[in-house]
Amino acid sequence: MYRVKPIISGSCNWAFTLIDTPGFVDVEEHNLEILENIAETLTKLASGRVFGAIYFHNIAEGRLTGSSLSVLGIFKAICGDKFFPHVAFVTTMWDTVKLRHHANLEQVHKELGEGPMKVRGAPGIFKRIRDDDEGSKEVLRYFTLLARKRPTPPPLQLVRELRAETKNVGSTAAGRKILEDDRSGPTACCTVM
Picture (cartoon, rainbow, N blue to C red):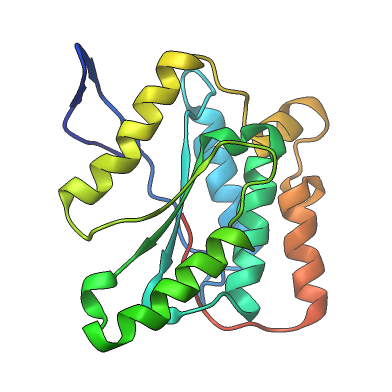
């Protein structure tokens, strides 16, 4: 966990604490262990609240397939439908792709926003960001504006389930998704959040 510089938005200064979580489908740790680490960190937060979650997709990888779809499913299960207004889906690494491929990847970006990364019934955002500080600030500005309208976000589904129903992450929606994916067979490596 690390603190970033405050971002100035309008007449208010906002500081964000960013939590970089490990990627799922890691070769050294099982996804359930990774989920347990994330759950432990989230439950230790003083307020117990997370204001926003960001899912990053490397556009150079193209469409979501196999393990990427699985990881997106785990991410959505961690967040839950009620939290979706506080989710940003972001495509990155545009500067690593040769310009001649951009037209095809623009189509992939559009398909992602209309398909697997679409936030149904919620005003969450889907952005293509530049790979610089300004690109990141676009997403943080969205969260700043959302904080003005809705200062108290709903809890993440993972946190809500751990507090209300069980202390076992394997029994949460995200845990069940991981266990279901395990029964489906091995997948390739990818990154999340």
